[in-house]
Image (tube, rainbow, N blue to C red; front, side, top):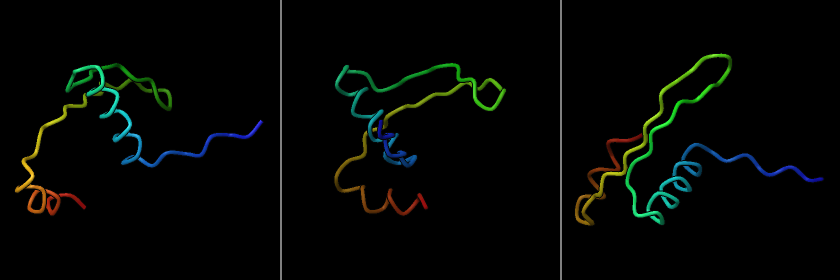
Length: 61
């Protein structure tokens, strides 16, 4: 059986954002167990106006 290709972090976040918006939600909170430790994870979608995209994108590597 073929394995699914790995998602990059930006691809995974994009998929999560789409799922949230499809459910008319803009945030998700959960407890995650990874590598033997527990983490609280929160994702919040903040709208960016079209005219602000160019300046906002420069804030991220």
